[in-house]
Length: 58
Image (cartoon, rainbow, N blue to C red; front, side, top):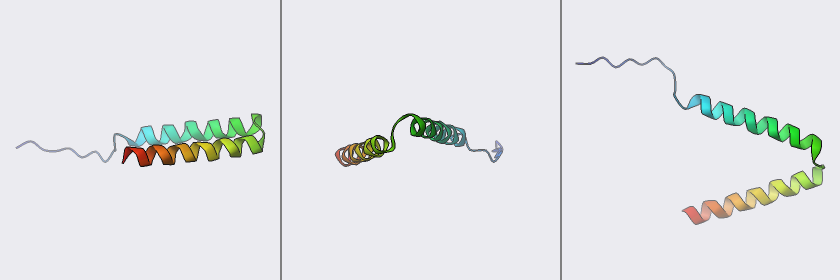
């Protein structure tokens, strides 16, 4: 009875692009401030923490 209007836009698409732009901007900003060895160390620790958090959640 009711027509479903499909406008072609995805409601969550803007949030993903926004989060990607923010993380890219922060990464570039931190790359200029923090020395590279410390940045690589922090990235490694963050990846290990995310892996453990993902395993504990499942």
